[in-house]
Length: 211
Image (cartoon, rainbow, N blue to C red; front, top):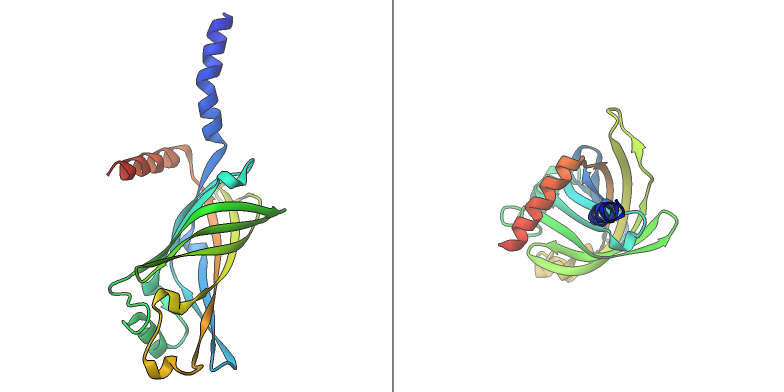
């Protein structure tokens, strides 16, 4: 009997360890990716991307074991000025026809205090990948209208747009028309995946790794 119990316990341990990490899917309908950049030094231009998707793998007992991946649809850029949006979508800046997405993939997660994280990862814009660090605040889970678990995450970072090839003409770049530094904010709401969803995502990830 003891041997049977020991074997059952040993078999259950890997499952218990795996259960420490939960999967959360970013809800595009309740998430926002935005940026702010100085124009002519005196004003700030703000813009948003209408669609952000991704997955968070969270270990609340040891947040350093957590990870995150997010994809922003660059074709959905909106600065409330149609002509400016068209220019930003063109090859002058984001070149969305060639690069319809920008992505972030975490490489390190550090807890900074209650409800705070420092998330390091690779940001890819226009085919160029650079390391960035997001300062993140997060909420505890709450129940949604249909009983699902939801939680919020807010991450901020600053990049130099030139590092990612976001430049225009030599004439414009020679002056302070558009600042080099761009502040990025990810305001995300994520929904906890159900066991079947988690299994499907794990299977897909394993298949991708084997390619």
